[in-house]
Image (tube, rainbow, N blue to C red):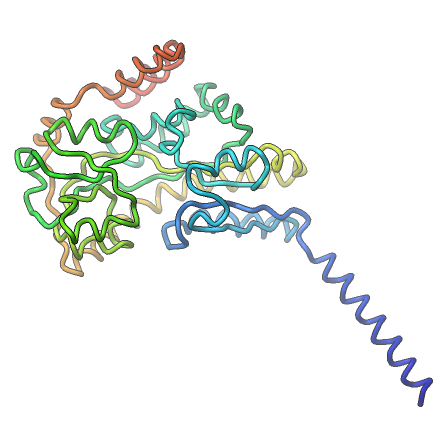
Length: 341
């Protein structure tokens, strides 16, 4: 009996060792932690699909763990965390680094691009044609993977007159960054900095007359409840960058780097197609809940642009003061040629 028990114990130990070895071999060779400032929602599905495809194509050698809602760092910390190697990947909003990403933040200047698709196409072309964009990310020790588009921005509030410039005078409008407040102030509105998570309560309490957001985020945060009317589109800009720290990138074998680069290119294209469909669907969903969309006419938008300083030239002038005027002028000339402005 004692001998049998010993044999059984030995067999059990052998099985355990085999299972442990199998589990170890099944573990990912490269585990990448991706810090995201946004919460988990359908609006980051393209990024989730990117991670899934990389894992599948590398046959499990790579495992990408996306941590949402600032779980690995605040939105204004993720770039430096990825560059230092504290995390591996990050979704980075250029506007959060206005004094650091001097060139990338230009993609979030109002009244340059007419549509999200145009903004994304120019982003892709500029990265290939203008070395300054890669150099700027190199300085922060990160590699560019792809760019997220944003739906066009609308004014959303309880007053239906948001498509009338005269009615915007004195109104408190949610604003952000250094450039967006300028287009609001140009029509006599009062730019107010309100965090994304506080928009609903601000509209409800009346401390804000209009939010300034794309339909997708308006739907997710249910801003159509305190703000029935949405007027626009007003402006189109790009969203965040998806980057990987150079320390993490350089640890990956060439074949995995090639897979990630290929999937990043696919994801950039998918994002353009996805944003158009998702924003249309979001608008329909908002209307189904009682929200109303009022168009801002082409004439009204043209008048708004005329009242606003030349935002691109303002950026060039500010870059001259920093000793980067020649590079900024090259970017501006390239974009003016592409946009016809």
